[in-house]
Image (tube, rainbow over all chains, first blue to last red; front, top):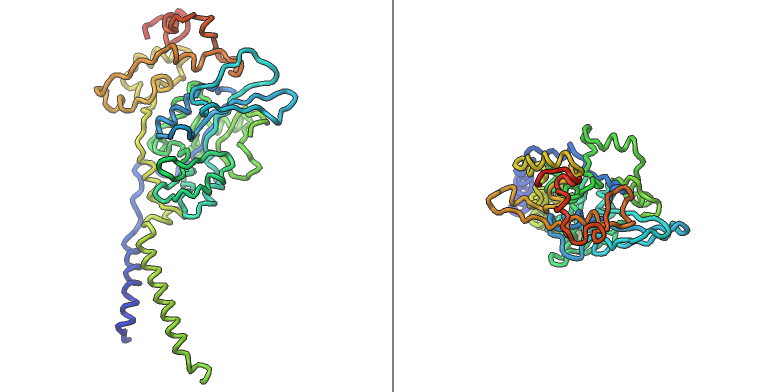
Length: 244
Length: 157
């Protein structure tokens, strides 16, 4: 077979590309942490939340969250007896400095609802990203590749829980990482570490020894907006039907 | 054969397409990051980059490794399950290098009421006080030791 100069010019770059793929091989895995052995999530125990704002402050300290933006925040619900579907919801500065005290209980009931990224399995935010800058990791955490994100904010609109924001300085999407830099090192998240009542608990659904399995067997739990079919896996225990 | 007498035009055109495709592959080779597609439609290396973010909270296990006396005092009281950094704030710097400085003692006048200020919005079974009526400006730690807050629990911590 005779190869002309022209054919050679075409074949060389093609061969170079093929060789590059051969040489790339499989990258080195992280030491002592296998993504395939974990499936991260969180349990929120609403009756235990006292609205102190420790989680919000801890998150901002741990993750350099800019002022006025929140990776986690706490909402206070006031549900009136006669109008259950229209609760009054407040979250002053995300509940960072707590909530105004209520002197005497008037009608209805009060409770606090901590919110964060629901780490959805079928997350709308990752589905709308046009460049593949946000994704669900093999261990079940929704992350943003900030080097790849171009800040179009489709994901901010897509998230039905309002868990994303555009970082005002970096101009890229930002969100709760479930403290990925901590949980991959055997620590719990900053919010769980700082919660004084155990209202928030990091759970690993693939760990058979995690107390979450016993808890889910014996307690009624809900996820937020199940009708959106997002596959949310932040479980809420003791949540009122008025929570949105 | 007359139908194919101008096939040369088509061949040149096809050649142009092939060339454009190769240019596309070469450009793609340079602009698509190596780890893209490693786990899915994203840059696999981003996972390790996010995991490398520096932490601020040491975790109570790190605190208890040195401050076992306080951990013991705390384990007997109502605050047994309140982690150290819930009140003392993020202390990884101190845990990594204790000589870097002593963390400031939290001010109980603002610290305790964050959780214990009376509010009808809080769960009924959670201990709450109206700080003014209860202590009238006397610092909380005069009577309650933060690590074991029950009255008469003794100890100095």
